[in-house]
Image (cartoon, rainbow, N blue to C red; front, side, top):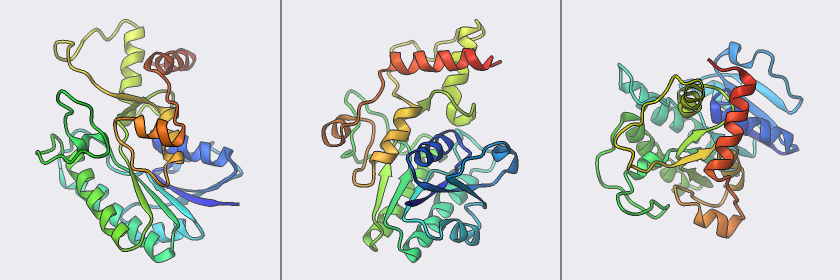
Length: 259
């Protein structure tokens, strides 16, 4: 049985990824930091390892015997009183995972970054070939861009790594900061949200949670970003339309009686 490590396994994306990998027959080592978040979560193919990105020893233990690593964990927020936490978690923590992966001879390393590192698309469409030279809007984006540079350094040292740059993710799952859009949809359905940011003319990009998970699993050899053309052309990636994803999300919201 193939064994993989998923960091951030109790988060919005990490949990869905761990569950999918387990259902597909992989043994999943799930790194987590809160007992409360794994309570009642049982799966014969998932083994839980308590630890943090700042604790290299816990990472080393969780990664033992793993052929692939999905590094999803990170500090995902638009703001923090102490901005240093973004760099401690997203850069320093990533280096700890990279170092362990290189030392243990991991075959594939998938790093979850963000499309925010590519900057605004302006009048065009962002792709994996874009290089952004401007100043990133948030410490989150800046820290992720710096973390990507660390991943590339370890790639040059022999670690087979790939970077995934998902846009804003929505859909059924944890109603965390990373899944803010789903909470907004729920409030809209209840008549409690009627604000349209800006003047309604600005375009945003959203990815349905099931498609974000699929991208990570299809990944191993490609570097994906906002445009899905390469994924569709080379790997047969078929994402949900926004209408389809929104429909599934609304059905889930109503079944959960979200307030």
